[in-house]
Length: 299
Ligand code: NAD
Image (cartoon, rainbow, N blue to C red; front, top):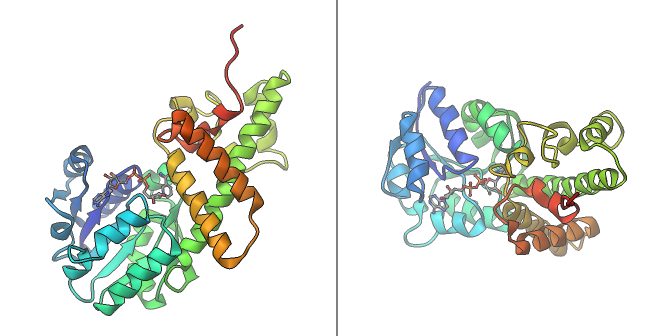
């Protein structure tokens, strides 16, 4: 079945996700604020539009992949918001990582206009977006998830229903808080080993087969040169930005306060990434947190 899809937000994640929908035979109307991102998508066969409203009109499905809550609320809500122009009954997949409160607010406004919206944040990084193996963590009505399944399966491999609207975001925030803690912990452990004379690759191989192993040691090592494909081996370019991780740790802190939960490690990690960002590293991949622990010494 070939559909027409409006895709808004063609960044590190949205770009490759859109490419996979094109490869599956769907027709895409795309919009991004950055002309270069639009150009890449049109070269792959998408039709560029001059506005988000144009991309989202006359389509079977709308997908959005934007940085943060304010972008998503700005896109859908208010007088100029997309919810005023999207046709009734249209399915909307909002894939950005945003505050659960924002997701619930937009979803409620959508329901009020007869638009079916799912919060569907993803996990798996840019590699997962390119390979079409993302994990989708979905909040919203089960029937809408069923309708979205053929599209989700093109972009992802594991699809979870976390609960009602906003639940996808809560689960995603818990995952990313753990990811931020693990990456900082992995950088700390590797820096300790190297400071004590170990080779970072040898230590990484040991940890990857021992009880300290985790996603960073298996797939996304923060030490330059240990894994060819990892952002660490490419000056920390691409991947998942420090400021996006900082945003997610901020969302975890807010969720923690709202529920009176205790998240001391999440808070510490948030402060580490904030410090790292203020040192001018906000746009680097988040594995560059290693720089807080290790600076190459002059021999
Ligand atoms: P990005 O900054 O690379 O891309 C965001 C894109 O949205 C940009 O191209 C920007 O121009 C566009 N944009 C912003 N406002 C817009 C608007 N009003 N209309 C149209 N386009 C607009 O970010 P990303 O890395 O692709 O991440 C997107 C989301 O996915 C974030 O919420 C992030 O937390 C989440 N996420 C990222 C990763 C990752 O590894 N990068 C992994 C999982 C989840």
